[in-house]
Image (cartoon, rainbow, N blue to C red):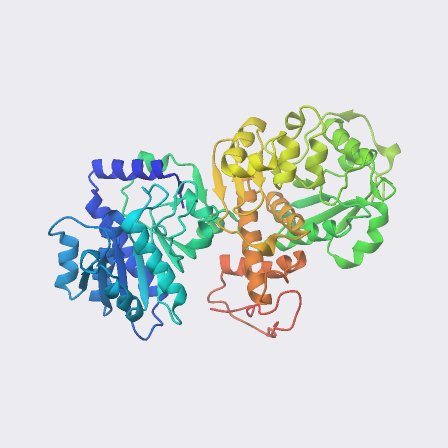
Length: 570
């Protein structure tokens, strides 16, 4: 799904029109798609009655087309013309011909007809204003929208509100919203996701966001040139690695996670289990020695590299040990739970700058120093850097040149501030531009976490995760995300794709955990991992499987996330 500015959307439509796919055809596709979304979303209603608030532009046209289709499909429909349309408008006439009712603001000075229509209909289509608005709204238009908004808020059983392309009064670039804006239950946007819909405060008014096509022909350059996208299940399904039936663990790679300190023990466990659950064949945890006893029983599937430490934090000498244990590692994560001690910072500096051992031997977790032969400079495996690892990186000159490219960096706004020197407010003011700028400058993939996480690649590709939820605003949530990304990298998924797919899966886990637990406040980081099997099952549903000698059992009372489906389901 493309993620566009208003100017980009205008250019797409203009090129389509000049290429032989005119505005009327685009409107026909959009209106039909809108009607299908409304019909599908509200098929459960006993009384199918749709009222459309119709403006003078394309949104009003889309609404009229949708009402005509709904009328033909057995709905009872009414168009309330808020802004005058052309005389003998064929879209109005076609709706009238199939039995739709036409009302106008001009004949309803005191809003009596509008009020009665709102009471009677079960679905309201808001097609008054589109992407070309200027705020603030003024005059009669603002009065109408405000009257509708207030009336709906006072109704005991208001109609379901569907915004056409965007809620009327939303700036589709900035996300600003007029106070008269009618909150939607469902927004059906056309051709591409407009930037402002995934910004606040507009996102509070959007409800569920769905996309329908406008029949664009192939080869529309204005469309093809847009490199920003919004992540969708189909895209994620396409980038996740296959899992053949004759697989062995070596096919799925080996992730090394270097993390943890005595103050942040759990970060290692969260990242390690996430890497395993997303499909890595082997996960090795490199931790300060004192953490092993506390962690080993919680993740028996892991193997371990016990690292030199100072008072329970990774010590500088650990760099040599890590490099001696990279023979089979296909991706490495550093940083979760590190802390910011000077010796750990020196570890990061040495890890990036020291030479790679040519051959090593020895038994046990730590290879014997005396067995290390001559060293030769070598390549580090693909890397993910998270949490305190990012803050420690920021202390090093030219750190971006020392990391193997492209690494995946996963900063929240505070960590991004440490890396860039920008104020957090400046970063948050334009998260997309900030992530893109520094991904290009550093040559690494940037995952700027937060509401609508942004993933930017050095080559200009950008992915937006269309999720904002306080379920993800918990300590340890970032450790799970980092584990997901390194688990995908270990399986050979490219840096940008692993980062974007991992972030999408992570967000879906937060939404599912909150839904199952009944509250975003109740979700903790471990619940994200508990939700992960169900999220992956939705991406790769099992169909047509045959159960032979299997045991089915309900998971409804199992922790951390109840309600998982059976292993074999249509």
